[in-house]
Amino acid sequence: MSQGTIGVTVHLLGGEYRFACTPAEHEDLLEAGRYLDEKMREVRDRSSKLLSLDAVAVMAAMNLSHELLRQQRQLTETDAVVNHYVEDMAQKIDAILSKSVPDGL
Image (spheres, rainbow, N blue to C red):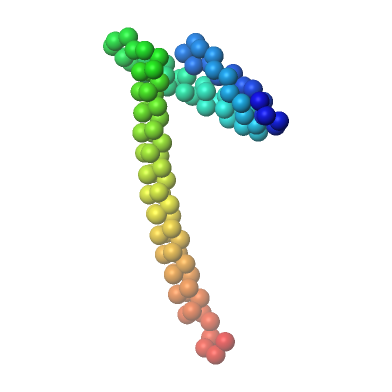
């Protein structure tokens, strides 16, 4: 490990995987590992057939990618709605202010 990095062990479906990260990333990496382990267990438990670890990992990765893309789309849509609302409010404020400011100022 290079200077400034620490080792962290992530447990996925009973296996141990070592990673290097900065001290600031340590807790996030552990949380990500717990989340991935949970998703991999869900895939394994829902499957009606025995899946290899690779197949479980790929299916969990696809599910997580789908979830991420869906959330990014929702965030983009929310941003557009908020931006529209802010622009509308700014126009209303400008209209009110222009009516209340005496001419010549």
